[in-house]
Length: 85
Image (tube, rainbow, N blue to C red; front, side):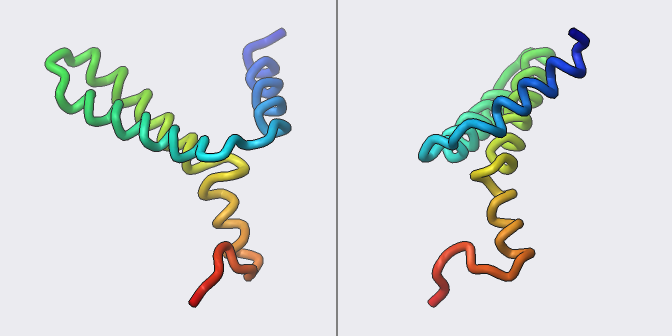
């Protein structure tokens, strides 16, 4: 298998599974913690790695079936994402 087909398979499996409650919130928290750790690190390499990982986790929290993509889809169709007062 090529790398591209392996990545596509992983994406298919991830899209097919159910979301866990609070999964995106946990990913957001872990991403923020990694970004804070990147800012405190003295090593340039550690800053780059932690910053990239933190950014990826924040992106993961914002995307996916239960994240910001769900909210954006609801707003585009005109339905209410949450009850408004």
